[in-house]
Amino acid sequence: MITLEVALGERSYPIHIGEGLLDRADLLAPHVRGSHAVVVTNETVGPLYAPRVEATLASLGKRVRTVTLPDGESFKHWETLNLIFDALLAAGADRKTTLIALGGGVVGDMTGFAAACYMRGVPFVQMPTTLLAQVDSSVGGKTGINHPLGKNMIGAFHQPQAVLADIGTLKTLPPRELAAGLAEVIKHGAIADAAYFGWIEANIRALNDCDTAAMAEAVRRSCEIKAGVVAQDEREGGIRATLNFGHTFGHAIEAGMGYGEWLHGEAVGCGMVMAADLSQRLGFIDVQTRARIERLVSAAMLPVVAPDLGVDRYIELMKVDKKAEAGEIRFILLRKLGEALITSVPDADLRATLRHAVLRPPTENPVA
Image 1 (cartoon, rainbow, N blue to C red):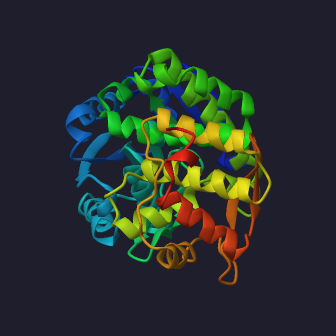
Image 2: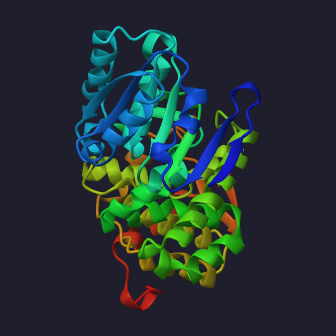
């Protein structure tokens, strides 16, 4: 097992990475102090792993209740959130009740938001079971739900007590979900560590095959990068926004297509290709760097051609973004591989990227 720390003073917490962590009562014990724990999961993950977590909590003498949510991004809204509140109230949960988020990013975001809101704040623990959640969404305390007009626009910062990333759960991921997680792995290399990006390129086949050693390293290094950024900028006032590389385009794809049509990681993967194209147009990176990013996204079995929503529709959707200021879209681009920047862009260049992303001539596609 590997243990990292998110250094946030009195709100600091550990990230444990390894196999068999769902059964580790010793790791949960320090973070579940009340007599009652509520496990929040979904209808896909619950049958696979909830009994193990319930047994671990019961071994600590905790009263356990499990809430099972419908599975998918399309259910990340108020009505589903209320299922958690209904269960907490029915169980008589108090301020010492600990919520356990057992699932992927949707479960983690919704459980964290429920924990932030219930009785104005109760503790929760992240037990992510997808690659995307293990390398990204479980770390950093961003919680929330979607609105029809914008992704993750309603939420709160609420840090977990701990993150237990059991990489054994990745073995049950469908290939499409595994690929979606690789988008966030690639993102961390692109924005923060060129050597790590090179390691991902060299090991992409092992990562596609869910090789245990490769996955452990990907989760470790990605969490290390994210934890370092969060420790510097917990509430996204500056550098933390760079973790959204590819997300401004990606969130527009998700909202424009309808939540759930594209997985979050699929949209982010394509969004990184679009952001790399825009970075090259503005003269920050060269064509070879753009091509490397596109080749790696494609090798991770992620889409590199965007859906045709229309240029004006893309821009309309991107204006509903948490990074927008006074109606101006702010983009995370690459100054060079391993270094990101936050900037506004000329309208003509943005429109050129949007047209190119959809209508890509074969001779200009470095993956072809």
